[in-house]
Structures are given as C-alpha cells and as structure tokens.
Image (cartoon, rainbow, N blue to C red):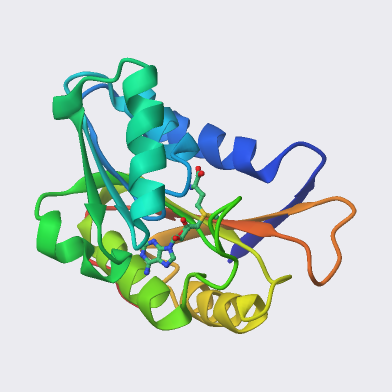
Length: 199
Ligand code: SAM
C-alpha cells in the first residue's frame, strides 16, 4: 500500500528528514544527481568522516560545484567520490551495500535546462540503487513533472514505484498542499528487509 501525505513544509527538507532517520556514522550512501551539491553535503554530514558518499552527475559543472561546496565545508576528501557519469552506471562504482540513495530529478539549477534526467537512465539507476540498498535503507526520488520531458519521466518513475513488491518495500508519496498536476512531488521508498529488489 502506498501512503500519501500533503505537507506544508519543503519537499527537499522532507527528503533530508527521512534519509537522516535511517543514517548512522560510517554508512555508505549515493547522491545520484549531484547538481550543486546540497544533498551531497547533507549526506556527508550524516555519515561523517568514517562514511562514504558516492556522487554522480553527467555534467562537469555539477561535479565542480559540488566539490567546491564540500571543500568549503571542510568535508574530508577521503569521504566522497564524485563521478562524472550517469547514475545508470552506479553498479560499476558501488559494489557494497548502501544505506540511502537520493535522486533529485530534472535539470541543474542555474545550468542548461535541456540537460535533464531521462527515464531510461533514471529507472536503471533506481533499480541498481534498490538492489544495493540494505534492509532498513531508503531511496528518495524528487520528481518534477513541470518541465519539457519531465511528465514522461515521472510517469515511468511512478510505474516503477507501483510495481515494487509491497512485502519488501514501504512506499510513501509527499505532495505540497497547494500542488497542481505540474508541481513537484517526492517518493520515499524504504526497504523492509535485506532482500533483493523485486519490481
Ligand atoms: N541534488 C542536487 C542539489 O542538491 O543541488 C540537484 C540535482 S539537479 C535537480 C539534477 C541533476 O541531475 C543535474 O545536475 C543533471 O546534470 C543531473 N543528471 C541528469 N542526468 C543524469 C544522469 N543520467 N546521471 C546523473 N545525473 C544526471
């Protein structure tokens, strides 16, 4: 069963809250869409100097922006790996289990709005992240139906989420109170046990 909730606070803040709930110092996590590195910095803070953040983005601008943010915040260089690579390739770089993966879809804020996440690689990334997730871990997916191509992509994400086996996964949907069809929304997918992804 999918739980739905309308909230008045920020969806990005809610994503951070649900991820923080499951993380501990020393965990390994994935930021699947680095952008300007806000989520990466948040994840690095949660897992601490004994943890590891793997970050992916297809744009060098995002890698640079994220690296600057982490360096400015004094995050230990050995606690993160930033890859200029699609999140479809997560499995080439991350082989052990992860405790969380954050997907923030769409385009780089302040960047080229034509370089958007695409359903094919997004679903590939979600599938791999789901299979790497340990029991009790969480995936978050910020969806943006409002830009060109966004509605098609999030329709595929919705299909992916609805196809998950409810014996293995708990799924919640968060919307802002005043949401329209084009408003962003957030999927939160918790893995119930240490089983493999069934979708
Ligand atoms: N999480 C970011 C932050 O905290 O600033 C915002 C992410 S932004 C909304 C989406 C990012 O996804 C863009 O930087 C874009 O380059 C990136 N992207 C697009 N396709 C991708 C792919 N296949 N793999 C990884 N990143 C991708």
